[in-house]
Length: 69
Image (tube, rainbow, N blue to C red; front, side):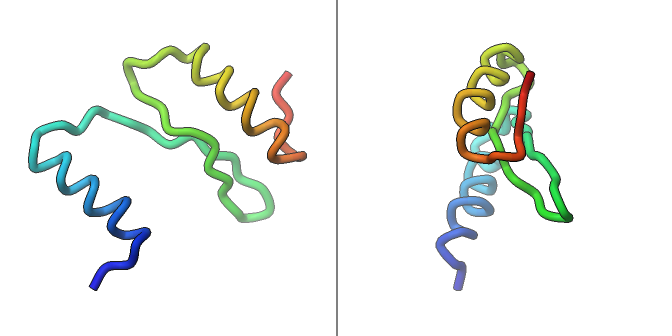
């Protein structure tokens, strides 16, 4: 039996793979004190500037250690 988290990650990935819809997404994260803080999900064909703006607007206020200049 899968947990809810597994359903949203593994099952979603498997379903997309079965349909040939893997898009080359990647995870942007920051590491602090041996912990990973997941900041955004990006796409290889997406805009770097747009991803930067999303991280800047949502992560900077949320994580005090995360400062983007």
